[in-house]
Length: 170
Image (cartoon, rainbow, N blue to C red; front, side, top):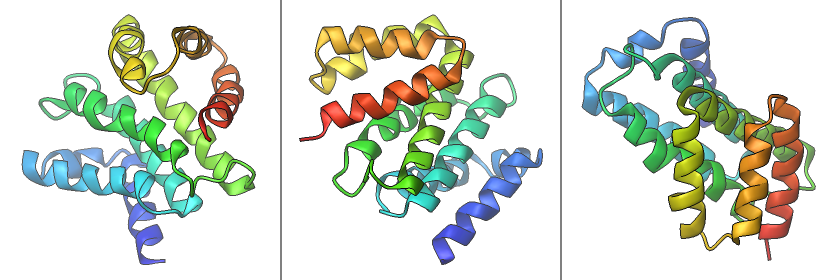
């Protein structure tokens, strides 16, 4: 419950236009806070907390993509947030038959969609040429994923993501 409360607090801070309170803490402290959100999405098998963490990720990407974000935020997104969007749903504890987990996956899709909206072709190129091949994803599946990501309607990606991870899990 304490973790959930912590993430709910961060969600409130980021959702109420107070993200500068985090950004102004200095690079080391910003990284610590954002890493705790990554850990919340990746390491704790609590779909409610995971969903909140993905909401925070989306909001930070939305807010910090431009000049207002911390230095090096784009690299952080590609090195940490994008992998979290794939590694969390691949965990055995991420139960795609559970309704709360599906809501978490939906927020994961929103995070990926927000990253794509902010970085566009650069994001698609990174996923196609670097990240998804590093996960041993077949080229056909990579193409399907990137097509779903580029659709204007976010529901396309949300629906596809569930299929994508159902196929990817043993």
